[in-house]
Length: 111
Length: 111
DNA sequence: AACATACTGAAGTATCCACTTGACAATTCT
DNA sequence: AGAATTGTCAAGTGGATACTTCAGTATGTT
Image 1 (cartoon, rainbow over the protein chains, first blue to last red):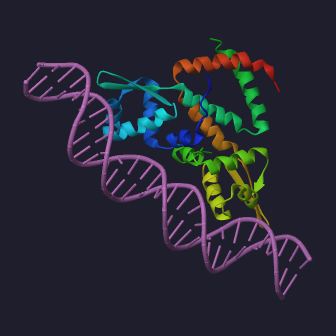
Image 2: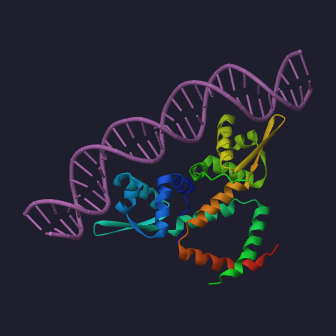
């Protein structure tokens, strides 16, 4: 039960492309098929699939094929890794500020 | 008093390089000169400066030259932009979970 | 069965990027 | 002043990357 170590190289690289970020933005709304993603982007299916591979490898996206259609959705793992990185790269005084901010904001929505 | 819009392309690109992330990791501890950065990385001064330019452009690093030595330190702006992005790319249920987590964790350090 | 749909795979290409070298400039030290 | 330190600039190079095209392969539909 080992957690695979995060490859931040590939994670940030994945996020560094506007097309890939557009894909993610789209998936925040709801899961979409490959061709559903390709259409508004104005690129070939092939290109989309290539981007999806990259996004899957860093666990930002999960895809599943049912019949002939591959459905893509967001996967939280990559996002969590990203947050982790940000947390680890704060200077000490910023950490303190953050905890304060969280303390002030917290009681709003105790779902 | 307009805030310049964040160029996420360049921001993520900047973070996608291991050398640049090594530089940031180094600067979390304390400000360092250019040659101070170059030495443990095993690359030329020139290369370091090129990386620094990229990091400065996305406001992850701030540098200042005094006499002949340029001192580099972290700049929070880029990091904040990064967090912003992550927040905007959460699926709704994750947002709820997060607020819960924050609520539970908050009262620890009300500095 | 015939046809359309939704993807998959291999191979090519133009561009970008990290890094180097080598020549130079500006400060500080002795 | 002379020498060492610290950084800057311009140009080049090898490898990665975002696409494309073209030729398939399943899977649905009629």
